[in-house]
Image 1 (tube, one colour):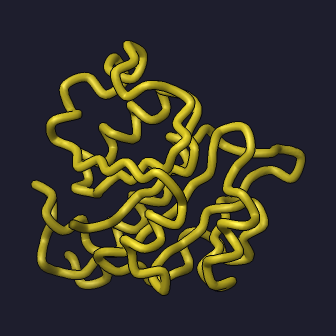
Image 2: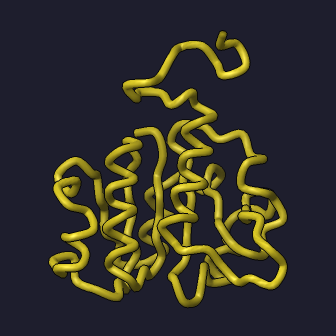
Image 3: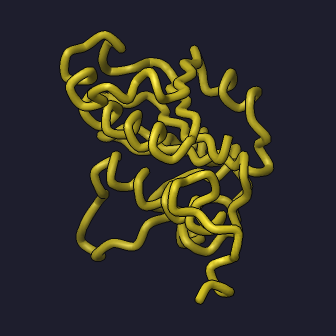
Length: 166
């Protein structure tokens, strides 16, 4: 499994549906941490993920502690506007986990603080703006993680590292 994507208390079914499709297309496992702001059977969620649900590996956790117990926390990255490391600076590895908070509140401080400071990442934005759409933010980070792995497993992957390609 290339990467783990964790959504902590997601609220909007369409965003989660888009992220299910993203995870299916990148071979990543999606972790959903309750409470969810929707039912997994909700029509808007099904419309957003189309026929990708059966292609995605989705795990639901009752709590953040359940999620953290299931991953290597030393290789977890918390996405937060307060992160001091830009999302494209870490050297990601297969199996790494990236955590995202809810659409309205972001990742709670008590969760972000469980992640080592160097692994608290942010996405650059204009100074007067608060946040990106959740599914867009997840896409940026996951594709950067996968790019660093030369898109391993994709139909377009190559065994040569990016810097050695013709």
